[in-house]
Length: 609
Image (cartoon, rainbow, N blue to C red; front, side, top):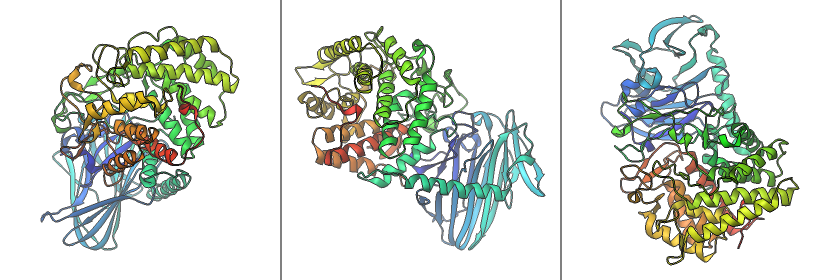
C-alpha cells in the first residue's frame, strides 16, 4: 500500500529515478528512463503492481525510522531501530552505461534484526507479469524477470523464494553483517554475462558518492537556508538526464492534486518554462557548465519551424507525448484516471517563448560561451510570435477550459520582445529592433489597460475578469514593473486576500471555472515561493523571511517538496519531488539574499517604469 507522499525519498542514476518509502519499499521506478514503463508501480496501485521492500519484521510494531542523505550525496540511508537491534539500509542508483542498477546495502549496527524481503516485478506500469526464473551468473545464483524489451536481474547473498507471483524471504542481520542486493535492468536481448560484477557495481557506488560530493562542494550560494537550497540543487541534478541535459518536471505521474479526483497529470517531461529558473539557479550557484549543458538541450529541443514550438518535450527532445489512461490501475488514494503522456503538449501557451528568451538572456549576461546558431533561432521564434501575440491561449496552468487573454502570458510575451531588444542593444546582435520595440510597447499598453483593475488596484488573471492569479507575482520578477510599484503592492494584497489558504498560496480560485475541470486543489508551493520573492522585491523583508522559513519547514525529513501542500491535513499533494517547487525555492533564497545585499541587476531584473 502506498505511503503518504512525504514519506518517500528520491534516488536515481540521472537517467531515471526511484521513490523509496520510509518503510524500505521502492514503490516507483521506471526503467530505463524517466518516462519508460514502471516495473515497480505500487505507488499508483497495490504491492501487486510491483515493489521491492526490505524492512524489519516488526511483529511488535516498535520500529523507529530515521532517514538522511549521506553527507551531500544522493545516497539514501534509512536507519531502523527495533526492540532487538539496529540496522541500516543504504539505497543508491550509481551512474552507469547501458544498464541501470538499484543497489541496497543492508548493514547490522547492533543486536540482531529479523528482516523481511519482498521482490515483486510487474512491467508496463504494473500490468505484465514477467517470466521469472533462477539462473547462474559467475557461479552465483540470480533471479531474472523478462517481459518484452525488459529484463531485471536480482543478485544478493541470499535470494527470496518464489511464492504465488512474488519472491519473499526472512533472514536475520547481526551486528557487523553487510548484505548487498542489486536489481539491474538491461535490454532483454543482452546476455546476463555482460552484467558488471559486484566489485564493479560497488566501485560505481563509491564513484557516484564522490562525484555527488565534489559537485556539491562547487556550490557558491550564500543564501538563507543554504542546506536546503543545496539539497534542492542536488535534487534537480538527479532529475536531469545526464546524456541529453533535459530536466523532468517530476519523476512521477498521476500523483493527484485533489485526492480522489481527476487532476492527475504526467510530469515526466521537460517544460520550457522551467528554462529561466533552471538557468538562473545554476548560474547563480556557480554551475556554469551545467547551465550550458541545459542551454544546449533547449536549443536542440526548439530547433525547427518556429510554428512548431511546443511547451514541453521528452528528455531527448521527443515531441510526441500522447496522453492515454491506465484504467487497470486504481490510482494513488483512488485518484483516477492514471495518465501517461500529457495532452497539454498540443496547447498554445504564449508565455513559453518569454521563458526561453529570458533563459538565453541570462546565459548571455553571465558571459557563457555563445552558440553561433542560437540567435538566428531566437530571431525566427520572435518573428513568429510577432504574427500572433494577440491570440488567446491556455496559459501557464495549462487549463483545459476556454482559451483566454491571460495577463501572465501577455507579460511573458513582453519579456520575449524585451530580451530580443536587449540582445540587439547590449550585445550588438542583428535584428529589427524598432519593430520589436513597438510590439513590446503595444503589449505593455494592453497589459496595463486590459490586465489591470484600477478600481481594486490589482492586475487580474485575464481580460474580462476580476479574478487574480498567483502568476501575477511574476511581474516584478521579470522586470515588467519594479517590485515597489504601487500596482505590484496592490496585486500582492489581492493575492493575499483571495488566494491564501492557511497562509499558503493557491494558483487561482478553481470555483471560477476557468480551468474547465471538476474538483478543487491545494496551495501550489512554487506560488508561495513567488510570494516570498515578491515580498523581497517590495521591501517587505520580515514577511519574506517569515514565509520562507515556514515553506522550508514543509519539506520532508530529507528536504524534498511536492507540487502542492494541504495545510489542513498537513501533507504533501501532487507529483513528487517537483522541480518547479525546488526551482522557486532557490529563486526565493537568492531574492532574499539580493534584497539584503543588492547585486548588479541581471537581465531579468531590468525594470521599466
